[in-house]
Every structure is written in structure tokens, then in C-alpha cells.
Image 1 (cartoon, rainbow, N blue to C red):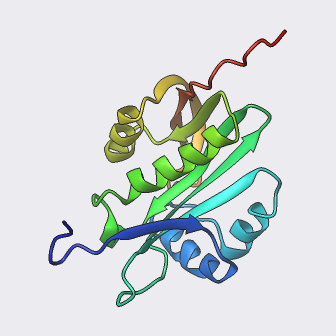
Image 2: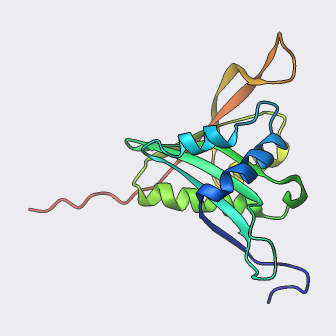
Amino acid sequence: MIGWLQVPKTVDPVRPADYDTLEEIHAASFIAPWSADEQAALNETPGVITFVARRGSAMSSRRPIGFITVRRAADEGEVLTMAVHPRNRRSGIGRLLLEAALRHLYAERVGAVFLEVDPSNDAALALYRSVGFETVGERPDYYANGSATTRQKALTMRLAMQQPKALNRV
């Protein structure tokens, strides 16, 4: 049963009218945010898709409250970015988005999914580890950190996707 104040959430592919809101969410989440135009152009790239979380009630705003952008290249997937509006963090939106993206990549038959994450982002690390991502490396000088002279490292994480084995037919 849905609680009195809990509004259900939906996840669907990004729409052109969403990009300005995605820019706002990204700017509230990262020091070097992606513009609406950059996100729109990225989504024109083959293999790239963005999923958007929205409140699921007809009586609430249908503006995005979070999003995830992923890319498939051959048999690998990559989480390019994920952000949730600050007012909606720690409410399961990140998990909802990540699971939708992973279902999509699984259906696209990827064998592994990669991502980079700020090692100080405990909430993101906990989420990624809870679905099976493992740290496989580091990227030095990956993230802008507000300083003109230094950058922050990122952890590289990998999730093995268990695809069914092909049947050998005679």
C-alpha cells in the first residue's frame, strides 16, 4: 500500500522538453555540469539513452526529479552520469534509475557495465556496491573539484552482467 504522503515514481526515456530540467539537476549535483544542449547532443549518439524519474501522480509535477544516462558500445555498457535533485535524494530514486538502466543494458546483451564515481560519494558507492559493482581501478585527475590547478581521482567500478549462454544447435 502506498503511504499517505508517498507519491509513486515512474521512469521513462528522456523527452526533448526535459533537457532544461536535467541541466538544473546536473548543476545541483556536479561542479562541472552538463548543459541542456550537451545532454541533448549526447542523446543523439547511437547507443546512448537517458532515463528520467518523475513523480507518478497525475496531481504532482511531471518534471524530472532525477536521471541516468548510459551508453552501450558492442557488448559493454557505461553509466555516463546519474543525478537526483537534492530534494529527492535518499528516497530510492537513484536505485530506481540504476535498475531501469541495468535492465535496458541487459536487454541489449551487454556483458559488463562500467562507471566512474567520486570515492567520497558514500551514498553512490553504497548503491553501486549493493547491486554488485566492484572497484576495478582508479582514474587520477578525473573530476573537477573547484580548483583551477588540481583535480580529484575517480574509482572505476564494474558490474558483470550474467547473460544466458547461447544454445549450441546441431
